[in-house]
Length: 149
Image 1 (spheres, rainbow, N blue to C red):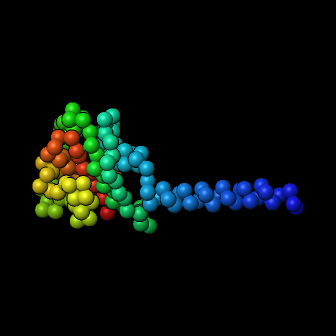
Image 2: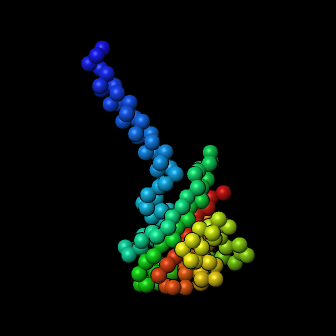
């Protein structure tokens, strides 16, 4: 029995660390999560120049519903390319609602100096979930919010 203590302890520790990693990743997903969210909901490849400068996601509820949001900085050319492609995508249309983004999303954007007055165009589309993309008037920043209900 003594020969099994080390392997058993090693397996237990591996399981414990794996569990801890999955719990951590559920609360703090890496950038690839947001890239996939962008790609699935816009049907566009994530721009090469894009850098996620801030991100946040809510923990999924029992039905898998969550809200993710991100602020993405990209080249001026990629900014205009994404803008043009989404403007001509029949899934997306101008958001004419009086409440463009959720209140906590607006607070999230404000931490990087972005308020609704700095967002020129807000497009809304539904592929996998409700997806809003805002184009900031600096011609290099886009914001998005994915919300399933």
